[in-house]
Image (tube, rainbow, N blue to C red; front, side):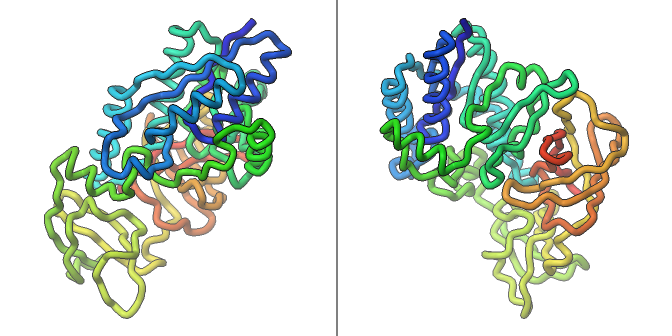
Length: 361
């Protein structure tokens, strides 16, 4: 008999994942335990209306689902780890002129590190299951991370940080399902989360304005500085470099008779560089902190496809390893606004090879 920890956020995806595990456990004799993670205090402004996994009603929804599907339920306090690895890193990333991705940091350091280790140790579990849309298969003696059956919901972009040991102890019950099928199953089981809307916000920025977080956490109110073009010609004044991200168009206060976008954010000089759309696109960029799911890269130079945002299309590319930590990507066609701090995730067909975080040009 195996014991499985089902990570429950209070949303429909993790609810159905837990329900499917409980159903299968009835036949296999396995034991499923539902665990909700408390990641940060929920008493901030805006949390009353938040639908995130950390809103006040999320634990209640997860607990009710656990009761309905017949599994024990526990709440695990991971506030300290989440603050250090996700919230603080998010704030520091913006102050460094990057555009951090907190969901990937949460997966890397919280769900598939702290939760996995505590789940295996404290609950005597053999593996952890989540509501991510992804698949894991054994291929050539290794665990391969595969895209989900539902291409619209595929979340491998957020999971490229996982290694072989983590994948060996992880299950993705929704990997073969589509979102409509998940909602149908939830409705058939009368789960209270069946019609719950998806959250599109950062869970610890429920009001949607990360500038408030920078002010609260780092005392960053923003100091006005120059907005310039690639030649250094001053075009306007910004409210603080950390208030801008690469690819941003709105809120620049620059009128040139054509659309302009943020091209670079330069903290050292408190400068925001803008350019036309074609100036912000690129066919060549570097990623750092590389990780490969298989543990090793396919080769020192190899063909792949790359995705630089969750909703962006894949673009064919050539990847060249540089040193021990980096790789260079040369794409067949320009990609829109590669932003420092965002992930460049590499694929070979349906297989997620790994990735890295885009470095400053």
